[in-house]
Image (cartoon, rainbow, N blue to C red; front, side, top):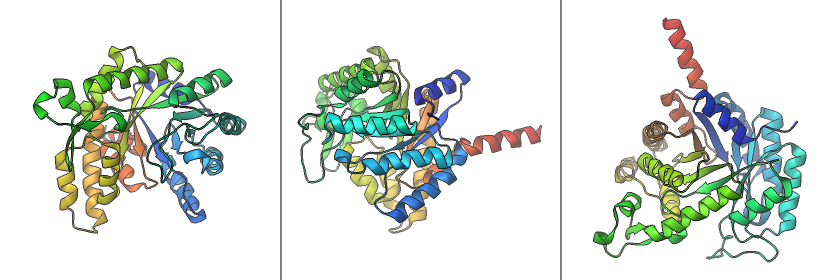
Length: 342
């Protein structure tokens, strides 16, 4: 039986005024990892995630496993999948095979992405007979399959990392650039207004071509999300915009990922993580849960329709945040307690 399209589920939640939760996993490298992930998905089912993203390896390197995991999530746990599909090393024929597999399996949700450069390759290049960008991929899916799939695309509140450049003169920053400025180890970086305008115009092209909703790059600033949504609406982008929340697992990983993505992060967060005793996973987790809880509440207050958790194939931080926010399974528990009290 075909799964429900994610955009239809999102619209139902919006009509009911009910914020939702969605989560992202990636295909593990070992059989034991796959077993652990499926067990974890079963435990997280209690939070009734609207959908579960499953990432896609460059050039289809994990394509069979990605599709297999999406099918298992649906059949074994009743979880709707949102399957990633990228342009990296992907000829049109490979995309056709992936979409045919998704269709046959009853999967109706695709995240259309350009993808990163393959390991060992500094710059991304298009494959001959393939696609040059996510926009091409979205157009191709819509032309080939109409509205069969709900398509989501990426959005970058700070600007895409490729167009974020070092600030040479801080005094020259415009008011809008100051809201996006990023402090890194070697100085300040920003997506300049002209580049940001180009990025927003490209995002609108993706939506106009058929993207049903947007999932942001991991975000650490609720006000930046609010500004990004306002900027989208100002140029005619009116689809749901779902903020991506990174569930911090360890200090080293947090620093590597935020540096790679050129993410705007509060200085206080880095200080608290650095202050955690070395090797103390519980202390890091506590900082992560407290920060993400405050961030998520701010995102919801700023109009986010739901929360998308980049779990890193782990569950404790997501679990802790949902408990503090009284969302997922904890929403029902809170409602039950309120009824009992009355």
